Length: 460
Image (cartoon, rainbow, N blue to C red):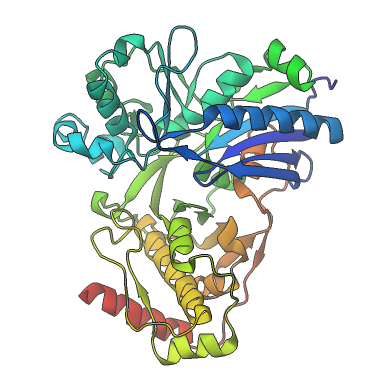
């Protein structure tokens, strides 16, 4: 077994995105991933409603924590998960109800009632979103549709801290998850919003803590099961998009935007070039970073849109595909996923139909870059743009975005930026956030295409 280290060498990171659940092993000195295993983040249809496979994830994490430790050694554990999620526990620490999938539209049935009690955008920095994307709407719907649930619920905790609770037995919420458009948090006063009392959970919401706080050491039963020392520290944990921001905190007055890509594309700006244009109707919001500070943010469901339009194709666009898209002005117009993003009320359409899979996928990459650019504008836009996650490996996306951002775009080297950011909560090295610059295209094809796209979008 390992003993607890002053500076952990190998950090295991539980990383649950909306599409996949991962376990990554990060080298604490270089902040590079040594190993990554994944499983689908399956949603069970019910009963009683669509919910996540938490027990399947738990078995997967335990099995692979043991394997990582046997192969490499594990010295500490951190956690990062998607937002818009909450877990209700009963007096015995078991689930008081299954964890609701935030894409379930059930809460919309009570939208009119919920809107009468939810705080204003000026209090929470949280836009009104459909389904269960506002955690407050989830809780309201769950409590109204199951009148005994409030009495059965002893503790309400944010999602990263559910895994921390399973690992340590200790309860908490973290500020980044509370600040993720939940309607439950006042980011300016750094305290729960008025909705917490309205819902009757003031005495049930677990204490809020910074993401980097140590939640505790590994539970002895868990440590025996997986072979880790009971002295293994577990950090409180963090919302996944905010994990991508961690490497760039504490960098003085540097103006920077981080584009976290996955199921969601989230643009977060520190020290923007201009004042943010936050608009509750355009899916802008105030996120809360790992230091507890408010961060202007904007987002759209880019990864989901990519999968919808790609439709399983693995075709790589050819130069001819690219030429034809520009020549014929083949443009994908927003929004592929309606109800969120900078153009929530618009319905997806093609300006002209693509003739090949290569044309479709190339035009899709340009669309995603243009949507990202709109989000960056809304947050005030940093002087340097860091793209992390899957889109950091899409050269067409990066080329268009870099052209629009005057050559200031860099791509993160890490394959799993969220995992590295979560690992840095435990041990941040002197140099972090490695990235590489993107060569700025020398022609005007991107700028003319973007100008045309914006004109069509504004008129549609």
